[in-house]
Image (cartoon, rainbow, N blue to C red; front, side):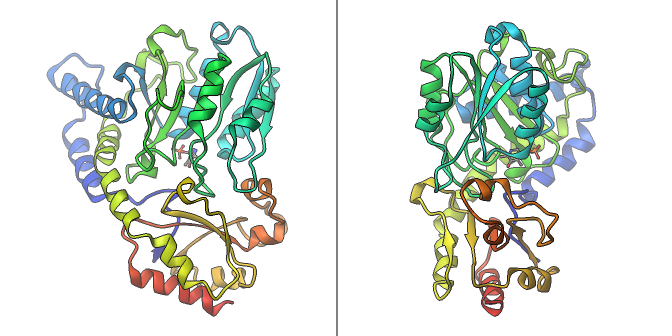
Length: 371
Ligand SMILES: *Cc1c(COP(=O)(O)O)cnc(C)c1O
């Protein structure tokens, strides 16, 4: 099986699997318990908290572990906005048309609570410009949420500039970094972000664990999304998932260097070179897209038979989940102006770290065969 959907989830790294098994076997105590084993578990959790904080230029006290980026986004937006004091009862939110779907589910809920939402449109390269955010902010804007790297296009948004704009206008700035963490340098001060979301399974860690960074967390009185027994600074209730956090920590430790080795191989360039006989449309901004992810439109390829004919050999993400009329084309592709037909002909290809030349041969031959 050639797996080309790492933007949806990276396979578990072997090093991570090893520490996961060890932690499940040995670190079974509750981190809230005051006996030796409980304290050891708590210590291991805090080591990962320090590691993550260090990677992003934050303090450990600003990191909350969650079940993943979806929950982090919920805490980032709802916990902060529902704490009226944090935002002086302002009720306008600026986000974008290309966010992960969970952001829209959150904003749609907030509309029922009386919030107004502005959805910024990307430019034709799929980027959210600082100017477009500037045009959308208002005196009553409480929060801006713009993702760091888009999960369908692999585009890197100008977070630093947008952060600066929010800072100058005293607006809380959240960025979903599920796709960028350990692939793009992150320093929360340089980027001017106040809140940031992370997920372990996008970097070879286990599913079901992530984190949210909240600037000056100790000085904020946040309304929890999950009320519990005081865990994670009372922001996120529930027994802390120690083994998953330890697995997340190992992924944080090892993913980055694997990814930079992978990047050096320039798979995307090789892939495009092999397809140069075809009409291939894609976004290429040089440094502004990630090296493992490309959204390609293949107008002259019978994408339906390509997908159907290779169901057991290729894991491909298509621009619309299937070609039946009921299925909506991707909101991201629509927002950059692709028609339904072209969205059907578009793949989000995201390469695994161990992608080989023979995998590349196979993929390109299959595309060729259906063109
Ligand atoms: C995968 C992803 C999410 C969801 O993360 P989970 O940890 O699976 O909840 C959110 N945002 C982006 C940009 C993602 O790529």
